[in-house]
Length: 230
Image (cartoon, rainbow, N blue to C red):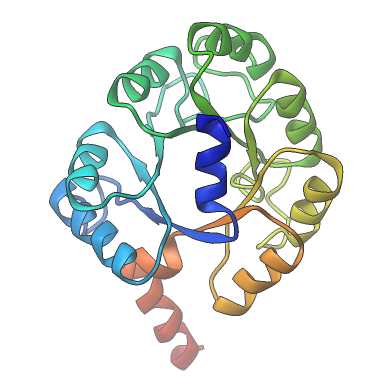
């Protein structure tokens, strides 16, 4: 069993917790994200998804779980912001995260290229790195599979202009990807209850990422408040 196979075996059937807080959020702090990841590990998480080199370094100090690393970076000329350029990919490779996730949608990237054009260069430069495709629909996942991504995620379903009406979690997309592509399918996006998580695994996904429902207290609080004010 090679390195990639061992990693995917480690997270098979397991929960990955996304520990992220953007600059305008109350928990934005590498220290806090490190503690959040530690709390997730104590709760039984088998992996962490994290944003930014500072957060990732702190999380590494606190837990010994595989990390799906991303860098969210806004550029003025593109809607793509999850690990959008080679600059972010290189930083994550240097940091040594187990899996690097990047936007694999059909949208034009900050450098003016599409994922079809840029990923072959990424794969050639870092042949041993595990890459996860954050997709929003079936066709994008199909392209990502043929480009050579190691795993496919439903991460961006509902978050692109052409999928904004999709109901989340996108179980339909999960099931289609599980049935059609022989690589690990990572369920991500909108999973907010244990029942939804279990259903995703019943569909055959390899692993699942849960974020806001666990690690964003302002979002969790709002759900409770909305229940008593509407």
